[in-house]
Length: 174
Image 1 (spheres, rainbow, N blue to C red):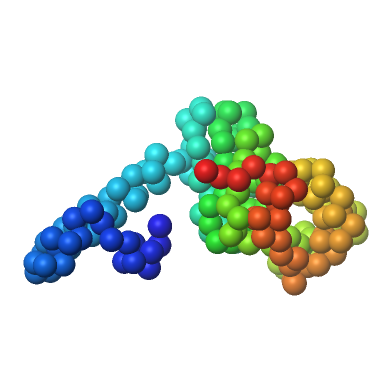
Image 2: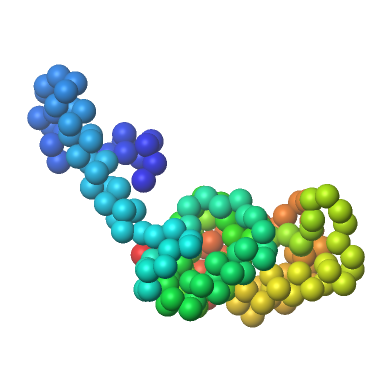
């Protein structure tokens, strides 16, 4: 829950708090924040060793394909579930769609692009190899689109909303 949404929320104790001074209002808002953060406290982060954990992915701007492949391999091996709940899931974050158990939010924006290296150009063989590694983490309907279209976009990613992925069969997060 964002700070903005929290401020718009009227906790159950709000009528009494609005009638009193700031200390009571502050306590009431703190209690509401604690309740809203309770579900996040039960979530794990990628790299957790806890079998069956729920891995919550907040805003994620990507990173190393090699490292992400290992994270996903571990998530699947430990029987963990992935919930993509951020506003953005870019680049290698989209590979989480290849987790055995995954769900997304309709509002999340997924950005897809081809592989690249920051300081030197990939050879055509490297480009093809890493494109296939990335695509292997996508459901079949995304895999062919990625290999035919999105991987050729390097610095201008193609974006898809979570609602479209849900429409195509990716589960929606509760």
